[in-house]
Length: 190
Image 1 (cartoon, one colour):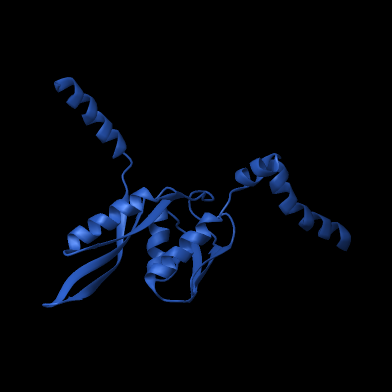
Image 2 (spheres, one colour):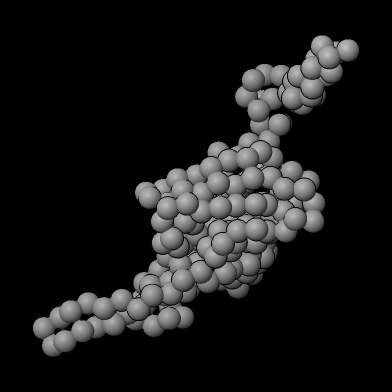
């Protein structure tokens, strides 16, 4: 029996080895009306990420705030997505996301720009590990919808390697295509 416990111990350590950072985005007091009056609880919205290209969000409800945060964090860790980043600091291309009435526009930015984004979107980018991005939320200001719209936009993000693999070409061919129109335009002017 002692051997089984020893085997389980290191496995748990390996599962928790990737350290995740988490950010509490919103906490709401919710009430349920019952026969004797009102019962109060708390709803928490948490964003979790490894700051190296993985991010997820979760929501949890409980009678106490710490329990709601714990539930939300566990859910966020279960539904993480991987997002390819250019040079580990920004997005590969401009993108937009949508959820309900919430729309977000995310644009790549040169080094040193920083994270120009509002509230819930900023939390997602910080947990993702993005250092330079310009983002704008349009429509809903509800943090739940803004985070879902941001995640929706990030899911559509693809790197040149992914595009090349999907098309059955080399990465160099994909990148040359982007630069070719500029060279052709210069030749036409001369």
